[in-house]
Image (cartoon, rainbow, N blue to C red):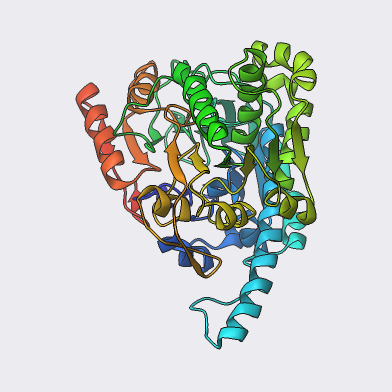
Length: 472
């Protein structure tokens, strides 16, 4: 068997793990690299032959896990793409939005480059189009949580709740003859992105409790070197930030991931308004067509909700009278012309594309305003530059002075921290023979690897680099 780490090794985004058995080849995730310095990776040919792949197993619908699926199909993949029903419904939405943004950005850059008389280092065209996404969606095969599914002779998969976003899963792949030699099954466990307990909307991440030994574990390490702030402090931070910004008469600009984070914030704002902790009359804009559509998908996937969210849903419509779901560009542009305080949530969450860049361009230079970060900002993204204090920052090709208050809400991450990752690992009944620590910046991955090795010295622990090949 061969394993190759084609993404999210030595970095966080672009998750893609390739596994080749005797006559079955598959990927776990096929994500887009989102760090600005790694953008060229998205344009390179796949090392593995897409036409030779039999399947893709998808852990969840974030772009850094699903974003290159249309390119894979465009380049010849004709197998099946497996995920939970919620994951696949969200994935199609996210990929359509990604294709639309790419098409718009390509047209914008072509026009700007022609005006400036300069050439781009990459082709000024979309990586894939909306028609490529439609072709990709025709290969989707939903598998409900906890159902053991045979996808080929000698290959079974099970999806279990990872508690990261709606539909997210960690995946067990069980290989038997003719895929491997010997009579004992070989079990591979892919954590995907693991969430945190007690977050709004979704259930807590579950633990792997099967008694059989895992041969190969792939565990994420986004926050493998840190302990996150307690989740129960998030509402306090939001109330303080919004109150402070509203008192100045400014706007709170919030880059959000259109899937999960936007819906989580709506739930949090409903709770804060109901408890009188933020003004009930402050306008709240969700300016992301994809986030609006995702909210509709959430409403159709209530079987993924926790009990508290089901109860809140019955009251939220009355509480959130000033919530505006923005779809058109005209409505989006009008927001920046509004006077007075407001909360503006817009995607993308790392500020590397989408309408958030327009809101930043219009508001980041005003000291009355706040830019409120609600999630991880990968190296090289516009969001990370702002957090790192770059001033001015370049937005739409123009330098923009940073005068707004820059705030990070701590504890809101959808990623488990080091202690939570170790608790998830330690709950596995039998220690995995080999553990690969992936999906983290080098320091975070190594820190988690060291802690796992201290916890289980008898196991093999590796921190693979991008494109490393493991054979057994």
